[in-house]
Image 1 (cartoon, rainbow, N blue to C red):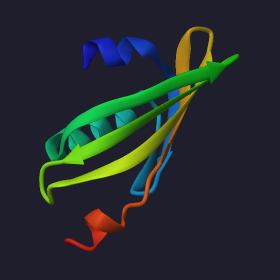
Image 2 (cartoon, one colour; image 1 turned 120 degrees about the horizontal axis):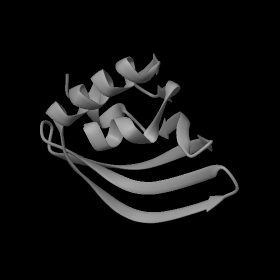
Image 3 (cartoon, rainbow, N blue to C red; image 1 turned 30 degrees about the horizontal axis):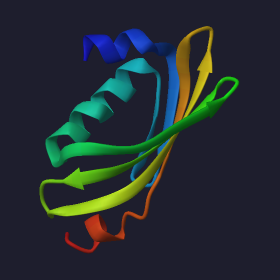
Image 4 (cartoon, rainbow, N blue to C red; image 1 turned 135 degrees about the horizontal axis):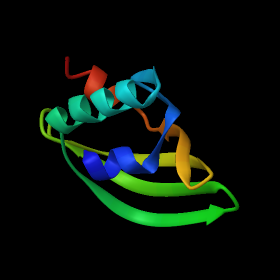
Length: 97
């Protein structure tokens, strides 16, 4: 988490299908929560333009055992991530609850 923290601006925001965070502490808490249910992220493609980076990956969950295609949009300012948006269909997770 220390390496991840070093890449984030203090005011980083996150918006995704299952929630949103404001500030670096909440973002890190969210990552820790996701780490409890995600087995791994399988990177497929990375591309960017200017201060925007998009990472396409499959999120592979532990329970339920499902792989969900995901896009993450990262906005960079002064070499720090200031905003993250995640795009995926949460139905495989929600329907299993």
